Image (tube, rainbow, N blue to C red; front, top):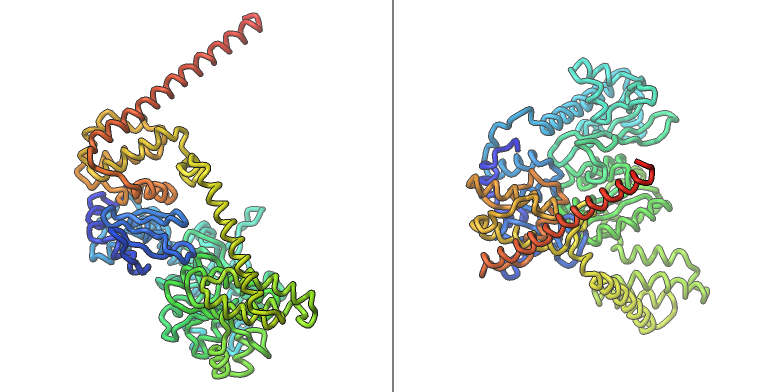
Amino acid sequence: MAIPAQFIDELMARCDIADVVADYVPLTRKGGSLWGCCPFHSERTPSFHVVPERQMYKCFGCGKGGGVINFIMEIENLSYPDAVRFLAKRAGLEVPEERGDGGFRKRRERLLALNKEAARYFHSVLHSPAGRAGVDYLFGKRRLSKATVTRFGLGMAPDGWDKLITEMKSKGYEKSELLEAGLVVLSKEGRVYDRFRNRVMFPIIDLRGDVIGFGGRVLDDSTPKYLNSPDTPIFNKGRNLFALNIAKKTRLGRIILTEGYMDTLSLHQAGFDCAVASLGTALTGDHAQLLARYTKEVVIAYDGDGAGVSAAQRAIGLLEKTGMKVRVLRMKGAKDPDEFIGKYGAEAFAKLLDQSENHIEYRIDQVKGKYDLTDDAQRVEFLKEAVPILAQLPSPAEREIYGARCAELAGVSAEVVTQEVKRERSRLSWKAKKQKERRDLTPTVQLQPKERALRYDNIRSARAEEGVLRLVVLDPELFGSAAVLEPEHFSAPLLGKVFGLLRARWISGLSVSLAALAGELEPAEMSHLSGVLTQPESLQNGARAMRDYIEIIETEAEKRRLAGESEELLAMQKKLLEKKAYGG
């Protein structure tokens, strides 16, 4: 491991997991544990469990788990070394000089520096004769101010196949680096050329202020109209939002979610510094979780066309699950926020914002618009589609209020709608119960790791191996009782590997902690093991429990050995028979 193990121990001692997690997730104490809603998936009922005495976290919903370093890696989207540096800065520690070339860190820093240089180049082109078309578009057609263009670092990619390549080469960057950063494209013939040509450029800046990618808007008849950087080692469009680096500081108390760069820029210029946009992709669960870290209310301001309505419907479901208040903006007389502000001004948009509907009203109105409610048959169809929406509302008050509204629209009594909603909720409850029963009827499956690659070949032995790990973490002196065990005795390679790593730490006088192995284990491995080590295990008669576990492990290992010998014997017999058959 490049970072000294002693430093990792000191870092974890300084960074209590409860304190670190509390910066991102409101936690409630229940007994000796802390609980909160998971920041890694959408949920209403807390299933995110923090165990301070073991310095571990585990979500029983999505399955993710680990120690404080894993938590920062996941929530800040950082590599292991960068997560260590993040925590070290928080704790006021200096990371010791690493051996080797720093690997991923240096590579990441190099790519970030390259993107920064590219952004400077595009911005300079915009203010040169080669950027005239971009100036006409941004300042003329889109009415952006010089301050907005400068604040967001907008630029222009010149028309040509190798303009950026030539410029970046003069700065000391290789074509392979531009390819890794997604700034160039490799053709089937092996030719490398600029990805962005004759496009207005929008730098994508992350929460730490680094340029991680670009979006480009075409200025001729080329396709696609908008082109974004591909996913790279420093950029993932499903986990970043345009302008969130600015919107996260807003004092307006909410975030406006738009469909594109120009809507977001127009809103910022008009004084709404809380606007963000997804990056050429539909809103994702990661986007929703990211927004939930910075606001309690989101206003969806998508286009009013069919695609915008469908996207809003999908976004509502993702955002609502995070517990945020979700509202939807409906614009009349304009297709999007940019056009609305251009026509009616910022004050009119502010009034429209205050009148935005909550997501329940919006969804019911969308269903209502599909049917002619003067026709009896269509009123029935309207209710059939509206009832599932009502049934999924968690609050009885919401179900009653919006149920009454749907009843009025359909021309039926509120009691009828209440009965239908109750029936639908019973159906959903029965379905969930049956799914749980099916899972409970297959206990062996429940004992297996979720990741197929980590599945146990021998459940009985693996359960004992898990017990050994729990015991030595609770009382490292029990490694003495487990002296007869070697990693190869374990039926599950992962459990054997961890036993060996923890024993090596014990021998070296380091902490026997799973959390300290964040740099040695893959995220899926750590998530599984955090579940293993947060299961109950008593140290009462610990030595006896250790002997029992070892006996099971040795018995099952002997069975495997004998089975292996039998297979070898059968293989030898088969070869002899084949030899005789061919007259050998």
